[in-house]
Length: 451
Ligand code: FCB
Image: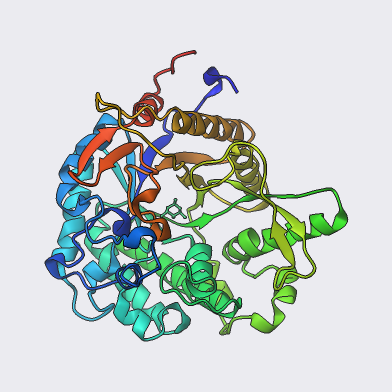
């Protein structure tokens, strides 16, 4: 794909994304309560090198500088998340005003800089006190979440016009409640808890939508899913059926309730003994009309049938070729295929890529630069795929690069750098990487070199 084939509408939104626990630090300041990620990262063996988010990129103190950096990147929007335990240190009850004030100042600072805030209400840092009561497995968490959302959207709704209820329900429910790789670290190996946690998350989402609309007039409300393009490993009918199952597991289980009001039938059949408890009216609640779907895309998945494999009876098949430092295949065509598919198969009003980016082992030169050509190339090819998807009808309105800056990459700790800004964790110095300068050109609509 040639550089000059990048074509985006005039009003296309270019932004960067972060999440509270990954960048803020200041975990005990201004009344913040502990989250499940504090607990999990302090548990020996859970996070690489014993890293925690205690300091992270110190954004809690450096947010003003970080907004200046966003300006240098020509970003027109910024996606960040609110830490629930800053607002309600034990999950519910008395509002912690200093926590709310922090985000209120951040929003004001962004607006002053001409940057549109996109707020994610839940990016995985559940108050530990709620986990102690059962976390997302307890039906009552729906009320707690809605009360939290009501408080935040009342406080910020006059200024924030884009709201994302949840980040990646699949990731936090399956990695947190089945595989034990993410907080709260339940390693049950069975789908039951993931499906129940997902269902509570989805009812909470559906209940929150009208609350946000009431508190933030004119706001657009959506949810962000981690979606993948899935290919069968061969043309064998068994592999094609396995790819369909994996699509049902990862994509359709999350898309269908939102847009069709039901979990996909083939997967309901497949999961039969693990299905969640569903109350009357839940599916209608979940299907509340939303204004946009946020798509996080990093790679595709290739799967093959594996009858001996427990559960989905399939395996993912590693591919030859280019990979990022996470070991994820670089596959921009998957973004194109996914966006076009979403536009065709689901009644989405608008799509945003709410995360896309890559980890590489960055090096700071003696002159203090970071020449991350691989990330520039990764981003460029994915932007081109998005541009093609728009030309082919996908209603894509904006694109957020993950991430504004290097940060705490969950179970990988600080080892994996996703930023287009480099963080020196010793000094907290920020260095705009070459990918940041590349992003700045694209965001400004300046033709890139080679056009
Ligand atoms: C996504 C998460 C985000 C970040 C990227 C690399 O799953 O939403 O916080 O860790 O992966």
